[in-house]
Picture 1 (cartoon, rainbow, N blue to C red):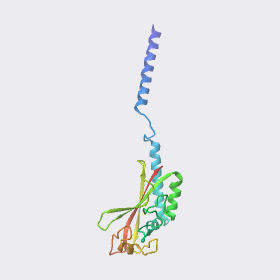
Picture 2: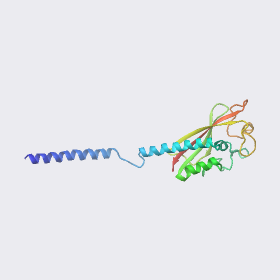
Picture 3: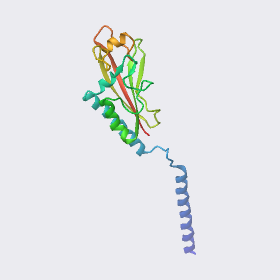
Picture 4: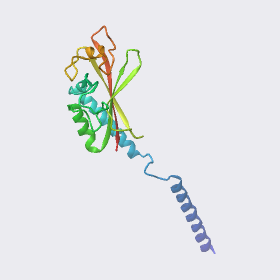
Length: 193
């Protein structure tokens, strides 16, 4: 009689334990869209790479020429598409080559925008690279670039101050009476394709 009671007790405990495991598995369904520590790690890594890319471009002097790669005749970035942006990768400059090598080979899409303050005090943005709408897992990095009135434009038409006076440069001169033209904020948004 005692043996039967222990056996029955063992079965009951096994059923309770198995029911708990089944309930826990159903309560936490894992789908391909479920956030995980792996996805967060990838996002953190992409953000660090984007930040490092901007820092390296600033340090080696390739970021400023990209911001100034403007054509006053066409009023868009030089050698860009009909819509004024680069869609297949970065601009045809060392900064663009770095972007393409860093992100393009790993199937990571990126957008690049240049932010600035308008004469009326509002904020403006001009797209440099547009590879599509970022996913929900996109990360961004920014870097500031200081422009001066005598910084030359890429098309050889003069400097940013002269182009701004003719309304042919994408940003406004934030200090018309001084040598500072403005502080541009270069922003990279990256996401896995």
